[in-house]
Every structure is written in structure tokens, then in C-alpha cells.
Image (cartoon, rainbow, N blue to C red; front, top):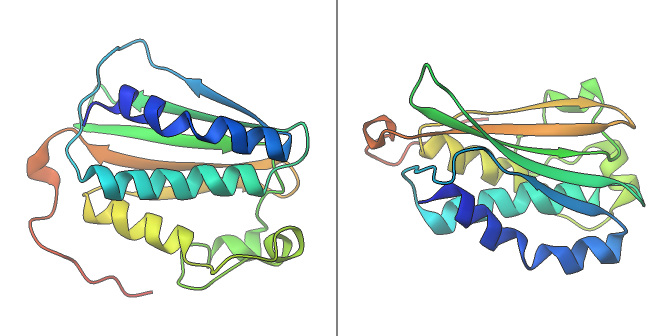
Length: 165
């Protein structure tokens, strides 16, 4: 997958959604014009769409969502990050955030719809691709979700893995 064009294509339909929520969307493009990663495009699209959708829905009017790519010079991975200026996540909720069916208290107050499966799915997709996912957040200040994807396909697990919570 060529990551820059992949993200560009994914962002196009989201600009209308961001207008509905009163949020601005930016792509902090890397200097490199082409970044290749190995993976399932449909699954990676699902993971990124979940992160972007959450960043938009749990944001504040006039807020912003930024997505970017970081290339590691010392290891065969690329990091993708999604930063928002939204409601943030409490330290209590951070521990359970990637668990199946879990939704934080402030997320339930802001957005009553949702299954609590989005971040669980993101974690499973990223780890199935040989990457890691993590989050940094401050309540009422926003969040940054990060995940890595290998640039070397030998780092992708060769078979389906079962994840326990």
C-alpha cells in the first residue's frame, strides 16, 4: 500500500462529515512522496476510519483533527497518528480503552450511539499486521492515537492470532 495516497483517498469523503460537526481536518503530509507498507487495504482502511470517525465525533465545535505519518530511520516501521482537540480520555478509562464493548463515561455523555467495538477492532487489525497501537490523552484537551505498521512484510504475523482482553 502506498500510504500517502491511501490516506488522501480515505480523507476525501470525510470533509463533508467534518463540516457537519464543525471540525477542521488536516493531513500533515511527510516530506517523502511515497511510503510503502504491507497490509490488507480494507482492514487498514477500517482501522483508520474508526480512529478518524472517533476524532471527529468526540471533538468540540471549532476543533480540529490532524492525521500524520512518521517514518522511523532506525527500524522497519511507519507510525500513523490521529490527533484531535476533543473531549479527551480520563486516566481511569485509558486502561480499558481497547477492550471489547468498552466506552468511557465522557464518551457516553457526548455521543450516546456506539457499540464500544471501534478501538477493539483497531487494536486487533494493527496487531494482526505486526504493529502496536497506543494513545496519549488529556481530559478536555484531546487525544493522539498512534499505531505502527511494518515496512518489511516479514514482520507481519503469518497466521491469525487470538487476542485476549
